[in-house]
Image (cartoon, rainbow over all chains, first blue to last red; front, side):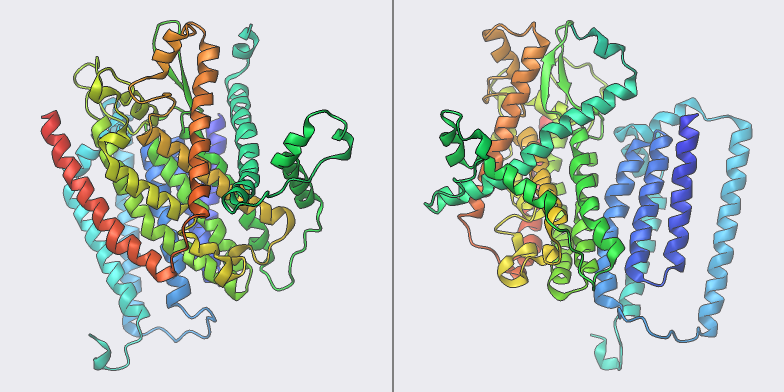
Length: 175
Length: 387
């Protein structure tokens, strides 16, 4: 199957560049690896016939890496330098986040396995991701709450970036 | 006559079609750089490049006309770019430095897959668009892929490891973010409109973002059906046009490569073939952008408003010849796109450049509110109309 070969190529590309995001020292190279990783995910969506998701993946996420570039250049000291040791609270919250991620992935995998046993790819579910209209309707009716929650998460992330990057020296800096 | 072609495997046909489109687009993009110099010369009342001629061609009668048009300058320039020493400065980040021009070309030549450029009437009497991939997502694919083009500029600026290119790269990313929003919002009314029922379409249709459908909408019968969208949505067209100028880094928005304050910006450290690739990519973006503009607001391959390609085919009696009709449609479309390219150049040599802060102010404080107001007004209007 040619699509299997393509899947392995793009999966390797996605996973490899995702690892590079974490392990590379150079921040710009990390942002670029993220871009490659996202394009790889888009390619996998194409292999799954989810063309809308693929296009949105490139449009929204790959486009947003431009903003990431700007952040890197404007907000981070490009010299790098030595990093301060982590605080206890940071380590603890990192650990909790890791646990949550593992639980989430495990439940996702388990539910996926159950769904595969109960019914192999429900025929009615296929057009939902494929047709723009169906997709929009689902997004604004059934999945409205998750969409809002994800949007709220993004807001938190943005506030975090502002807090992390702005150098507060005294209370006077907070305007 | 062409049966052997349809006997070929599907992927070979696709590859051949892609190659054919690229073989048309690449030379046009390269020739645009020549046209730019010639048009600049005309506007500034000087002859422009008019001496180049291959010695072996000098005996051909009447070739002096082509010589004065500067046709051969293109070949000379191309040859120079190809054979010049391609020096890489010692202080650059070599991998990204070499990768940047390649990355510039990929999105520039990829966007064309979703752009329809002609139509013909098949044996069933149905109008079929000519396009590499007639996808439902149409405009979304074009926007998604073309927005990746800015990475080449950012990478080139960053990898060059010197101040002016870097500044150019940063300006490019800021400009892209600022104008992409307005551009996307400005085309939404068009697609709201085209998601209404087309004449003769059954109820319960699902809309799409297909670009050929937009042209079909501008080819309907009657006064409102045949009107190009430039007449129905002039403000959308204007916003799209301004954002298009900004996205392709053309004057008056070419702060990205303004040679007066940034030397040659992201191209400063480049030479020879790599440098020329950036410019071919830029012209390819202009070509695609103009093509999208023509499809959305100027009726695509229809020769005149209220006078479609099918009308022309029936009047001149070639509607039953798909090949002729296809070629005529593509010819009309390319002619329109080239007229748009001429407009780009005309503006470049007419208007002065905005300062960088002015570019940002126009994008965020003027164009974006205008685009949002335009969208809201048309949304309400279209909802009332289709109710």
